[in-house]
Image (cartoon, rainbow, N blue to C red; front, side, top):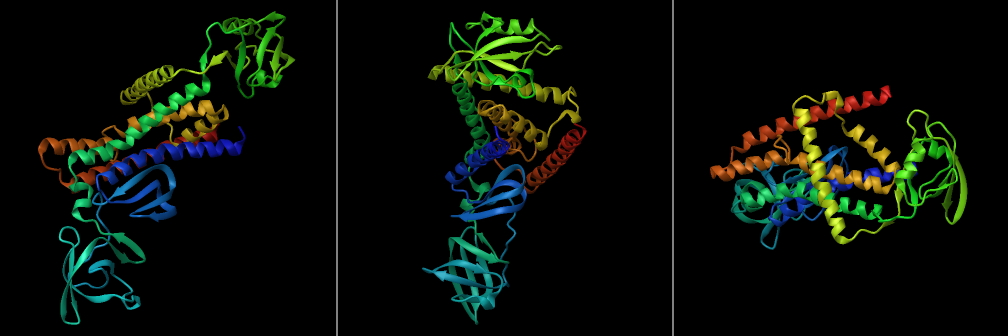
Length: 420
């Protein structure tokens, strides 16, 4: 693939993996009636931001994940207190805008001192307007405007913490589920791109030529049909093909391949040490049936899940060192290398990453979805929630530790790149 195409596919893959995960949270939060304030891809400073409906969609600087910010999950930075002077805009007998600054510049508003208010349950505000006490109803989607920023109020029935445990758990669990579904679809797509070996194949093809190998240097290309080697017909015997190459380490071989209907002579010399030329051979392929596709995707999910947990086990018991871990830089580097091998290999890699992302997020590590589900489970058993301040502190500390780990593995990635 061309470098620009590889770069675009790499960015697109990460964007899809993260976006679909966050979309799962977003969709089921919205279905539960929770106010979603922000749908963000990345962390850190905003690069792009647009508001649609009640939600602001943002793209942030650090491409290491994303988040969906729901009302009630974190303290609101805008507060209105009794005794404060502000202006309100009233439409259809309900307050739709509450202005906290630049009051002299506002037009078509009522200005007064706040005597009392409730923006969560009863939705009202009482103002002293030139000595007259006026009580106004507040629209459930009213906006508070301060320092050039609009913040929609969150009535109690639209806050995350006041929804039933089941709805909250579904909104959290939906993120990893989306990754599992995507992984299944991508495994299935990979099989459809690759095909299924045809029984009693009569041909051997070169499905992939690796770069900087004897095969590439000799002029072999993806899709070549190998008809003969040293005058001996290959037919559809892939094992015979491999054996002839292995037996010719360091010796020139005369091939005849067919490419786009034309027979071409190719001379290739297997590597002296490995006896390989750098190709992936395959027999004739056919399109998989629906049952074969589902079976392959299911088995791949099970097999890769076992491998992922085996990796976690080795990490816990010290069979991996911290220096062995890879971060965003190494993952991106591997993705670029895999993308160069073709869209089929990138599809398989994306399926593995999506499955890993779903599993990793379900681990009971503070700040991850698994930890939040654990707190919800404890709440369901106790019949009452854990102190929100304590839970927030746990998640905050966990997030800080994850960011520290991210810095360490990213440093390892960069050092590795420099050394190589």
